[in-house]
Amino acid sequence: MGFGDADGYDLVVVDAMHKANYASRICHSCRPNCEAKVTAVDGQYQIGIYAVRPIEYGEEIAFDYNSVTESKEEYEASVCLCGSQVCRGSYLNLTGEGAFQKVLKDWHGILDRHHLLLGACKLNFVSEEDYIDLGRAGLGSCLLGGLPGWLIAYSTRLVRFINFERTKLPEEILRHNLEEKGKHFADISIEVEKSDAEVQAEGVYNQRLQNLALTLDKVRYVMRCVFGDPKKAPPPLERLSPEAAVSFLWKAEGSLVDELIQCMAPHMDDSMLNDLKSKIRAHDPSGSDDIQKELRRSLIWLRDEVRNLPCTYKCRHDAAADLIHIYAHTKCFFRVKVGLIIILFFLLLLFWFGNSSNLKL
Ligand SMILES: C[S@@+](CC[C@H](N)C(=O)[O-])C[C@H]1O[C@@H](n2cnc3c(N)ncnc32)[C@H](O)[C@@H]1O
Image (cartoon, rainbow, N blue to C red):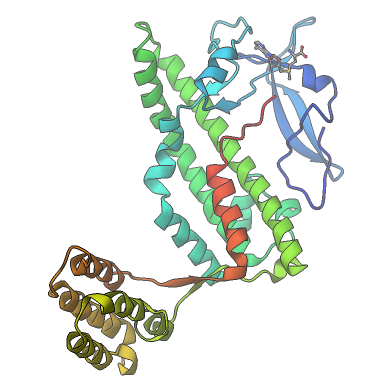
């Protein structure tokens, strides 16, 4: 059983190697008579085993492990002996790499991750609705207490994505499993496959939440080491003001334009370079009423100016122009606060890429 821990999290993971009771002897069944639920009793977390139907005297109690694996070998080695008519054949669920990651890849790419984190950092506030959504996902005060607002706000956004993924995943898994099994078996029951896909999606959902909980716990630890009080950890991302964006792109030492000139210098004669430099100075967007708009205009001008310069084998002005084009059409610039990069890495990498660490029963 897991015990409440003020520094811990609300999702309880028990490693029977270290702590166990009779519950660690309960087997999996694909048609279980029990289910495992985490509850808090007198402030202590417990994993309770609850009957889901009447149990005959002498009948073995069992629950659905609801665990997923991405490894075909592990899946095939986990031959299920529950003997029920609806046995899925393995006490683990196989979520092939494709199906497992599909919704994540399609809907929550690098841009969306940054968008969510940046939004949370800007807001740095948690609403009542946020706490309700977090609570529904099992993330409560034990896990969230003492964390800064931006991190809780970010977690809420991730939980909302996880909920969204939960609605999309069954059809993706079903499609993937039908394709895979179709290669080996002629007789496939769609109804059984559908219910398997539901169970697997539920396993992924639980796994994602576990990963989020574990990640938050680790992030809290890092924050405590760096800031003493995790609440004092400032938001790791900061949106650049138009003035700061001009400095970063156009004016400051090491800015985009500064580096561009330095790279071009060895490949251009002095008069051409000086001419370009003075034109760049004349296009400085700083004094404008609408700096953002003017910055874009100046970047587009620079793009065309650079694109028209003659390319050589070692000097691809056209490639530089393409890069400037991307900067010109970038809607939002933000800065990563250096001291927090490590925490950010924890947050982004451990949560999303550490998702193969299953709870093994
Ligand atoms: C938590 S233990 C369950 C108790 C274990 N059977 C025992 O006797 O101590 C989990 C392990 O039991 C085995 N197991 C549980 N359910 C099973 C099932 N339906 N079919 C085959 N093996 C199962 C697997 O080896 C699994 O890793």
